Amino acid sequence: MAKLVRQNDLSATFSGEARVSGTFMGIWPEGATNRNYKEPDYVFVPDKESSNRLPHFALREAPYAHDYKVRWITVTNGQAALKQAVGTERVTKLLQRRVNHVRVTGSFILGEFVVGVECDAPWARAKLLATELPDQVAVKHAFPPETC
Image (cartoon, rainbow, N blue to C red; front, side, top):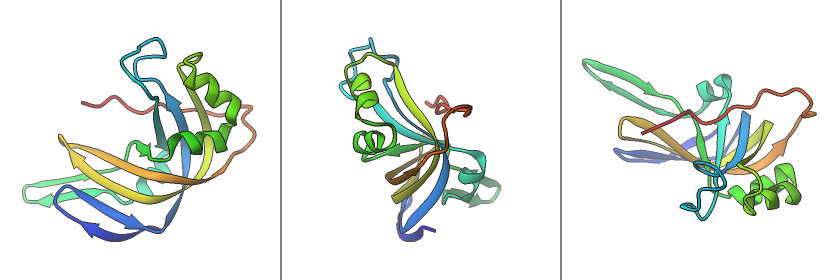
């Protein structure tokens, strides 16, 4: 599991790797026809069990006690990782704006993990290192939750 390397008031950086399960996707914010974005977002949405295991910020200053568990992770090597997970053809369709999103659900290994809190909401980013996918016949995909 990841080990704390550096921490400040707003973020913490971890070394090592974490095995997680969930949905990884490339998604055009507000849809492929919205030309205000030059690149799609690459995000990983961990399942509840993985989210509970990931490092996160915790506020423990009386009278406040709040855990900022990771709800979604920005994947820093998104395009390359998505090509590895779903193939060049599907990523090309995404980049050509022929689809709004491409997503896959399975197990993944994350590295270079960083977490933080901004605007009273958690954020996280990581590099996706490996993909392990089950048959995608009947899989429940997840989308990232709406944030401020």
